[in-house]
Structure formats: structure tokens, C-alpha cells
Amino acid sequence: MTGIDGNGLESEAIRLKEAKISEFFLRDSERASRFTFQAAGLILDLSKNMVDDSVMGKLIALAKCRNMSQRIEALLSGERVNSTERRAAAHTALRLDQPAEYAALARTIQDRISTYVACIHSGAVRGFSGKPFTRVINIGIGGSDLGPKMVCSALDHCEHKLETRFVSNVDGSDIASALADSDPESTLFVLASKTFTTQETLRNAQTARLWLQAAADGADIASHFVAVTAVPERAEAFGVAADQIFPMWDWVGGRYSLWSAIGISIALAFGGEVFAALRNGAAEMDRHFAQAPLSENLPVLMGLLGCWYRNYLKAQTQAIIPYAHNLRLLPAYLQQLEMESNGKSVTRDGEAVPYTTAPVIWGESGTNGQHSFHQLLHQGTDLIPVDFILPLKNPVAPDGHQPLLVANCLAQSRALMMGKSLEQARIEFLKDGCSASEAQSLAPARAMPGNRPSTLLMMEALTPETLGALIALYEHKVYVQSVIWDINAFDQWGVELGKQLCGDVLQAMSGLAEIKFDGSTDNAIARFRSMHPKCKC
Image (cartoon, rainbow, N blue to C red; front, top):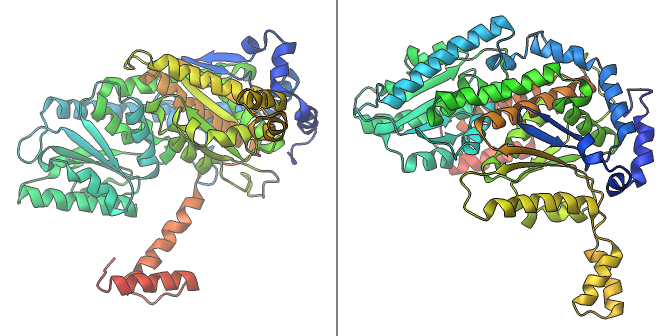
């Protein structure tokens, strides 16, 4: 990793190039316990990673060199860590009682949300025909969709107050599917947009409004809309009642916003108590992040490990594999969290970074992934670190399911580490009836190199509290990496360019302006216009 001199990690990477993770265990009977850490209901086992005491010591030294403890304090105390937008990233105030000025605002809105949600659940607020609401459809995109949607999926085993659906894609099939079997008399819409100008969200919101108006036949549909935005006047202009508009603030980034009023869909789905428990779990991880020594700090250790693989062992991707069906949306959520936060190529001072930053994040729930991409993990040519996430209990699983699920997770973790030798593969072919020469020639196809690293992140069960802690753990891990890389984790200017260009493209598609782009874009616009000659985008 060029640009951080004298830390010795480059030589450590060379030293460990031929090392075997499995041999670490043979030399150190206490390795598993020494490399296992606990906080906030989570158990983090790092022992199957390509690290030893020397590497971990140097990684901690790197964190100290980057003033990690002071930077953690800066984040949690509300300093302007978002340098390019000149503001704090105070999302932790949505679940902690500090910093005081931000936490006070958060409590006020949480109280309003609790009161409103209770009115919906009790039937005090009803639809245009007098029916109580039975379904909520959240319309948002990015952070206004991924977080609440992932949480609602993760907590699907909890008691539901309302059925909850999510619409994000401007592709009309998305909202058409959500509306197809919905009852307009009992459907509530949450319009989630920080600026209330997001094109995808507004288009879907307009479609929802037309759908309600057609069914209401002139009746007042205002009770069917809730808005979460930083610009309430735009929501009012759309037709949302002022007392059903909940604010956002510029010190809460979109991908960190599920703790804010953006999470109102979570409260509507499960009740305010569950939403509070989710925040409490995150707050417990926040306190651990603030107080634990760097060498025992879960987010710090995970962040440093990610930098070790990315910068020193040249891993280009990171797999997230939750062995929990309800966590199947977690990899998509973490894609945004990590890649939008740390997908940067300039430092906080605007200089080009001399090293690689965020890896590609991907994954799928186990055991589904075992029958698709695990082949690549075991026998592919790339080093791909894996995070296995494993609840040890599942209170709703029928008998026999959870033991098999846990066994599969542990077996995959061990198989990645141990692999299969050529001799083992040759013997297996002989047992299958192959001749000695066939077994010898076929063995390489069945052999696996092993020595593939993985992290095992366990919890007793997936609850609102442990889910909150899990999300906060990854949030802070991302921040730790941004500190090491000296980048700003809280802006996302790369997201804006396509949005800016979209307006010009729409005008050209509508024939409202003769704008020339490149040959490829111009040809595609011409084809669209030939098929939609009357389109007014």
C-alpha cells in the first residue's frame, strides 16, 4: 500500500504469501479464542483469516498512525467529518443521546412518529372510505428504500401490524406489481425523498396518486400519504398534509437514514417498540465503537482486515453471505453502504489516492449461494474474503432446519480454509471406479487450493437488537476504512452526474429540445422517439 510508509505491512504480505491458515491453528491451540471478540450481542471470529499476531499488531499501529481514536470521537461528537459538504455525519445521534443538539431533534421526531404510528394501528387515522389501513407502500430509492426494505425483510418473523411493500424502480413494472392486488381504500403510501425532487420517486408517487384518485371519486385522499423529506413545502405542494410530513436533516446521509423518519415504514410494519429496539441495538454498538480499545474494537478490526485484503493481498471483491433467509437483502444494502461511501479516488484534501479503495461488495443468502457462486470461492483464481453471518437460533424454523443450516455455514467456512489436496482428489476418483491413470489425470479438477479466508459473525438469534448492532457494525467498519484511506465516506458526488444528464436526455426524448450527445446516445433516442412519437416525458 503506497503512501503509508514504514508500517511493514508490505513485507508481512510477502511473508504470509505461502502461509497456511490451517497451520496457524496447529501452532496455536488458543488461536480461535484469541481471535474471537464480542460486543452488542455479536460474536466476531477472525481466526480463519490470513493474519497472525504480527500482522494484527501492525494493522493496529496503522490505525494509530491515522489517529483512529480521535477520528472516532470526531464522528460521534458531531464534528464536520463530511468535509466536501461541510457538515457533520451525525446519524448516530438518531440512536444515542449525543451530540445533544442533534439528539434533541431526533427525539422530537421519534415522538411524532410514535404518535402517528399508534394512530394508524388503532384506526384513529383511516382511508378515504373509512377503512383502516392494512398495507403500506414505501416509495423511495437508494437510502430511502434499501435500509427500511432490508430491515422489514430481516424482521419478517416478528409480529406484523401492517403489510409493507417497497417501490423504488422507475420501471413501471415495479409500482404496477405493488398496486396490482392492493386495495386503494386501505393502502397508505410513504413518500421518502430527502429533496422531494428525485425523479424516480416523484414519478412513482404521481402514479400512486392517480391510482387513488381514480378509486376515491372525488373523496379526500390526503390521509393516504406520508412524506419524509428535508423540503416539506414540496411535499405539501404535492398534496401531503403538513402534520403527515416528517423532516430529515442534512447531517443524516441517505445510506445512514433508516434510523431517522425514513424508518417510519419499519415502525408502521412492526410497531414503535420494535423500531426503538432496533435503534437500541445500534446504540450499544456505537458505545462499543466509542469505548473499546482498538485491539478489541469490532468495527475497527473488521475495517482494518478489509484494508489488509484490499491493499496488501490485492483482493478486489468482498463476499457477504448471511446464513439467514431473512437477511437475504443485506448484501444489497451493504453494497450501497460501502461502495457509495468509499468508492472514492481522491483524499479529503482533493489529492489522487495512491492506492485502491473500496472493493466490490456482493453476495447471497446461504445455502442458495452454495449452488451458484461458491464454486468460484473454492476453485476460482481470485482471493475473495467472505463474511459469513450466522444466527445460531431461529425460533420460527421447523425442526431439523436450523441445525442443517448452521452445519452448512460452518462446513463452507472450513472447506474454504482446508481445501482438498491432489492426493485426496485422486483417492476419491479411485473410489468412484476410475483407473489409476484416470484418477491421476482427473485429480486436479477435483482439488481445491484452500487457504481462502473467511470471517464468522455469529449471534444467538436475529432480533431487532442484534440486527441494529449488525447494521451499526458495518456502518462503523466503513468509516474506519475511510480513515485509513483518508477519504470522505459521507459524500456521493458520483451519483449526481447521471441525474444531471437525465434531464437533458428527457428533453431530447420528448422533442422539446434538439440536444446532441454522442452517436450512441443520439441513435438510442431516435429509436425511442420512433416508437413513442407522442411521448411527453
